[in-house]
Length: 154
Image 1 (cartoon, rainbow, N blue to C red):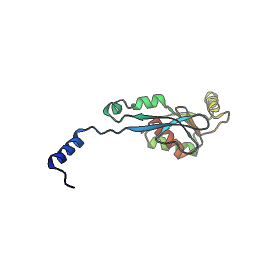
Image 2: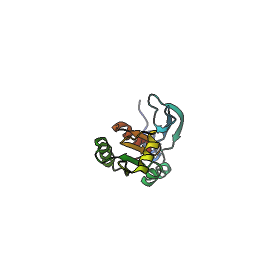
Image 3: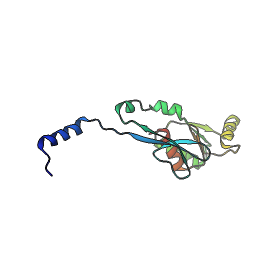
Image 4: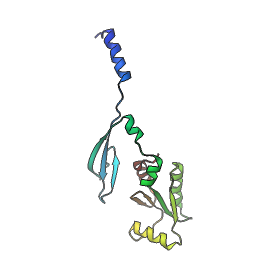
């Protein structure tokens, strides 16, 4: 099939001039404990709570959260002890991604131990990491990576 020259030129012109829409659908997923996370699709074991189509225009890019917004909304806290190998793995992962975090030494500080016990349900477990409202005990590279990515950390 032959396309007339002027029609072919018009098609190329439209491709160059028309804005590209990079719209994305975001799914809110809820786990069995009621914790929400936002993803492109829910993993096994999580239910879809809702979906939202986000526009892919310049305004959406300009309105993207800043690093300060992410740190404020999803602060990362590591409860650790100095001679804990798993704690060192968490530190390495956070430092490797240049994630700002607060470390709390749970060795002898009763106030920190009380906060840690409140997070873990009464058991003092290190490492314990919180990313916003999410909490993790022990070390799971993939779980920590997912939580940081879901929060918007680079």
